[in-house]
Image (cartoon, rainbow, N blue to C red; front, side, top):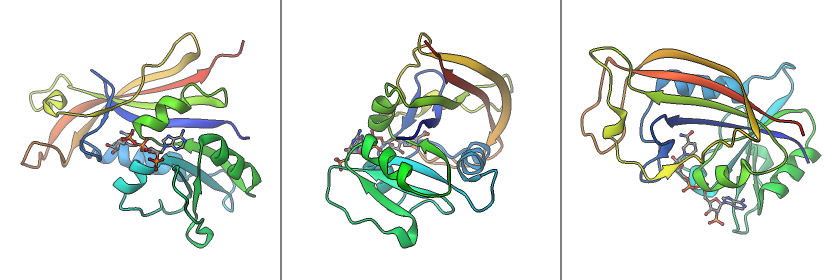
Length: 202
Ligand SMILES: NC(=O)c1ccc[n+]([C@@H]2O[C@H](COP(=O)([O-])OP(=O)(O)OC[C@H]3O[C@@H](n4cnc5c(N)ncnc54)[C@H](OP(=O)(O)O)[C@@H]3O)[C@@H](O)[C@H]2O)c1
């Protein structure tokens, strides 16, 4: 089986990642970062794999992410669709086994949601965590993320197991909010803190 990376964007105050089966917010810089991280390969002919839970796949209207091999974890009996880079697995282990058998794979990412993250972060093959943490910033037009009611959360990172190796802050605007808030929020700002952890070797 192959080692993998978890990638996630969450609200700093409570590690919220989802609301009503979808993303609680749309943060363009974070979305571009996710696309770049999961799509980029050092060798042009290679591809990366994204592994996700069934609910996350459904939140994407059951459309595989372009330019990546998609593996969906579900207990349901589903047929692989290699022509559209879409595969199914009954467990994370089966998903990693499938990745292992594929040729020209460069990196494997677990991309959520809560249920799959909770399992994956405990897995011995989880070697890296890439995290964007969102919070209020010190500007007048800072967006209050805490006003959004969420129902899916990322687990706490156990720093006995994972070592923080990168940590820096950034500022971005939120161009659209999909949440219980009705209006779209243009020109509002949040702080993005980028963190990267590696699994500690024992
Ligand atoms: N902010 C972010 O970075 C981010 C990223 C991804 C998702 N999200 C959000 O997270 C929320 C969804 O999270 P969720 O916990 O409800 O759903 P999820 O983890 O995406 O999917 C849960 C389903 O996936 C399958 N599954 C999960 N772990 C499995 C395992 N180890 N082995 C086999 N099957 C497994 C099961 O499918 P079956 O029931 O079919 O067996 C389970 O019911 C949404 O709001 C979504 O928008 C946020």
